[in-house]
Structures are given as structure tokens and as C-alpha cells.
View 1 (cartoon, helix red, strand yellow):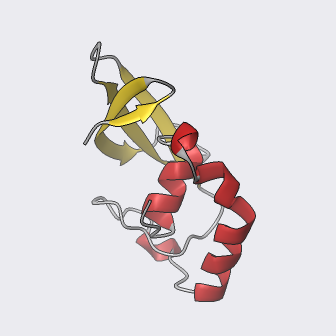
View 2: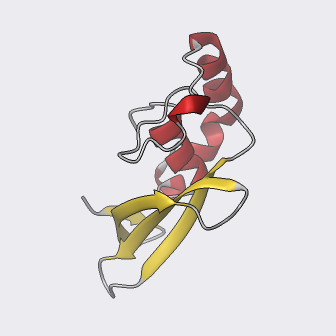
Amino acid sequence: MPIDRNDMKYMLMKITNSKDSNKKYDAHIANTENGKITIIPFGNINKRHYRDTTALRTYKHLDHWDLKKREEYIELNKKKFEGDKNKFSSDYFTAKFLYSLRI
């Protein structure tokens, strides 16, 4: 599903294990106007998360399932992933796939 980001349309193509040693995953997004692929690393490798909902589930052993911690994460970081200008940012993917937010 294409989503506008700064007047450009992008589509999530796939999620892979990150090549960045400090991140968990890489989101591969494509610009639907010119086909250019952009890779966005997300998820701090040194931190636990609420629930890994990626298809890979490589880091499911870091799931904490603590609703209080999840709510604290949302409260502290919601400005980073809410709104159209933040679609397809690292914070957006972390919230969507590691904190189970429906955004």
C-alpha cells in the first residue's frame, strides 16, 4: 500500500535482518514514482521490545510482553512516529513491528 512521505509515495517491500550491527532489522521501501529502493534500519539491538511482529521473528527472545513498558514507550516516543511526515521513519517501523502499534 503506497503512503505519502514528504510528497513522495513509498511502499514497504520487505524486512530483512539488519546489516547495521546496532540495529535489528532493515526495512526496504520503494519509491513508487521512480522505483528507487531505500533501506531504513530500525530497532536497537541492545534493547528489549514489547513483541517482535515481523515475519522473521529473529529477535522474539527479546520480547518482554510488559504492557506498562509498552505504554511508557508510546508516551515517550509518540511524537517520533505519529503523523504523515514520520511515515516510514526508523521510529515508525520500531513502533509498528516491535511495539505492535496499529499506525
